[in-house]
Image 1: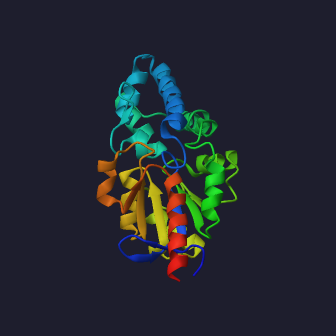
Image 2 (image 1 turned 135 degrees about the horizontal axis):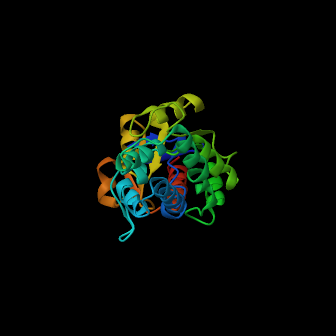
Image 3 (image 1 turned 30 degrees about the horizontal axis):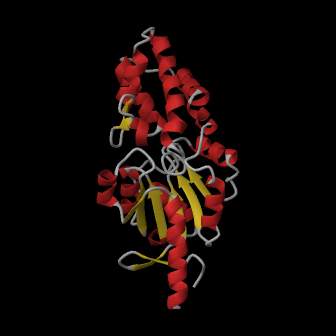
Length: 256
């Protein structure tokens, strides 16, 4: 048996690949995204000459600054950049030009890579997980270029064999396309893949793709009750994933 081992969760499955969500899973969602979202909202408010609009755009996107809570499956918490822009345009009452949209993406949304990961030892943790012989991928509702920039910023670009975003052409969550593309790119069966994410869309994507496991993490925008319906397992963060892999490897060696 390979180091990838056998994970047991009520039944026996072989996990050879893990497909991670990015924001809220690998990165701290609030620290990573609230600053650029806020700056983008303020920019749009200036365009509209409505200073009070910035607060409203954050709420429309799904974020309550008073409670610091996110609306389930909201545009800001688990949507694509296009979803965010469309929600803001609906509040504005007019469409932003392509030039303005590109400016917002490049000037504000891409700046998310400047912020702090969810764990100080993210790079070390990912390399430990990879040492089990598991193929790693990232599937995000952010743009692919932003995901790749994040991986380079944390010196993780060599650890992930597959990276895709909402603009990569594989569809968007919860459709199965990102999982299918990961499998096609890395020679994996869908039932050999574990999907790890912080939103219901991540877990429903796993279900729709018939992935081997759907693991929810509580490090992002959604609570346990919101994740439970589609999760095989729920963890506080991806740090617990390493403990799971270590315990299952030990169990598989004992039973061999």
